[in-house]
Length: 151
Image (cartoon, rainbow, N blue to C red):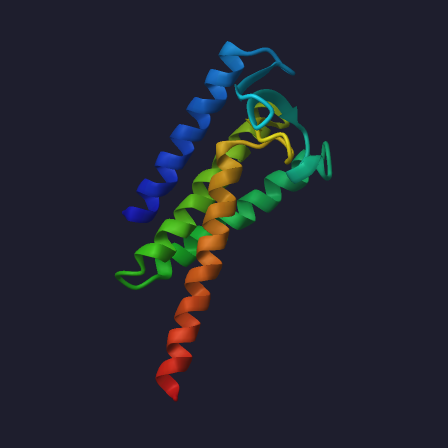
């Protein structure tokens, strides 16, 4: 249940934020929140991170479906507990589905978080990256604990 709730919250917040940006801003508009540090900048990204592989929508859809299927399968196989793993997988799934919805609706992803030193991104991207790092950390920690118990 925790996995699904996490994914749902990420998906709802992501889609709401993107809808708000599309409703309140025009494409290319940039609103300084903290001038020269953080802006809300509405861009439409036809690629992946940094605009890589632009206009490869079919590829991104298939890749996302595979990631989501793998993460859901992994979450369903987890024994009781493992809250951090469930959280990390929920973040990845919610973010991936959020960007998938954009790709299916528009053929691209709506981005708006602009820290001026990094390409513009969105909340789904943030959830995916956070979930992936959390997943790696959790797996590393569990492996370390397992090896520590063998000595």
